[in-house]
Image (cartoon, rainbow, N blue to C red; front, side):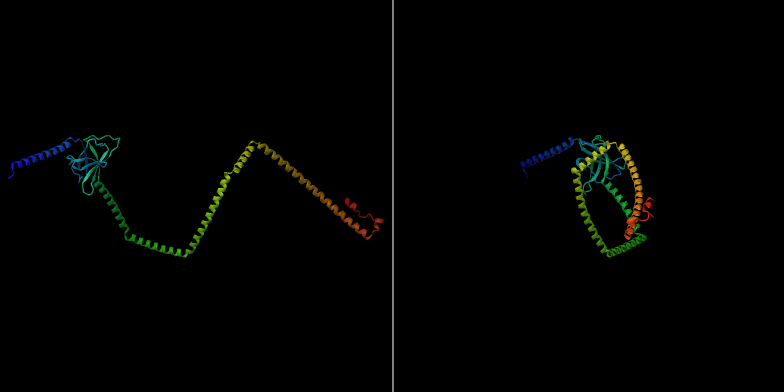
Length: 327
C-alpha cells in the first residue's frame, strides 16, 4: 500500500508534467496566433484538384511561402473550385502571377506553385484572387489527346498503306529496285577496270594540279616580289610623267603637222615614181642603141678579119651605122 510520501511525489510529478505540457501548447499556440499571414484565393474551373488538401505546401519559384488553408466548391458555380492559401506576410504576389498545380513525386499528393510576375506589374493585395495556371494532369491530358490524334492518323495512314493495291505496288517497286541493283552490280563488274584507270588518271591529274598549284604559288610570289620592287614604282612614275607631258603637249597642232608631213611625203613619193618611170624608158632606149652599136662593131671586126686591106682602101659607105644610129 503506497505511503503518503509516495502519493505526494506522484502528485507533484503529474502537476509539473501538466504545467510543462500546457506551457508547450501555449508557446505553440502563441506563435500561431501572433504569426502574421496574407490570405489569397485561387479559383479553378473545370479542373480536378485531386491530391490537393488542406496543409499542402504553396511554393513561389520553388520556395515554400505558405500552405493551403481551405479547399471548397463555389456555391454559385459548381464547376468552380476555390482554394484559400495562407502565405507568409509580405510575400510579393503580383497581379500577373499564376498558380499552377504540380505533383509531388509519385505519391499522388500535389502542391501549388506560384510563378510568373513582373517587376512592372502592381502588387496584389491580400484577399485578392491569384490567376489560375495549369495543372499537370491537364497538361498530360492535353498531350495524351494530341498523341491520340497523331496515333489515329498514323494508324489510318498505315491502314491505307497496307491495302492490297499499295502492297502490290510496293512489291513491284522492291522487285524493280532489286533488278536495278543487280544491273548496277553487273555494270560495276564490267567497268571495274575502266573505273580503276579513271581513278588512276584522276590521281595523276590531281598530282599535276598540285604541281601546277606549286608553280602558280611560286609565280605569284615572283609577281608579288616584282610588285613590291622599286622597278615597278619607277615604271609607274615614268608612265605618269609621260602622261603628264602628253597632257601638257599641244596634241592638236602635233597631229596637224604630222598630217602635213604625211601629205608632203606622199607628193615626194609620187614625183620619185614618175621620175623612175621616165628614167626607165630612157634606159631602155639607150640599151637598144648600145646593142645596135655592138652589132655593128662585130660586123666591122669580121670584115677586118677577113680583109685587113679595108683599113687602107676604105669601104663603101653603104649602110653606115651612124645613119642607123641617127634614126
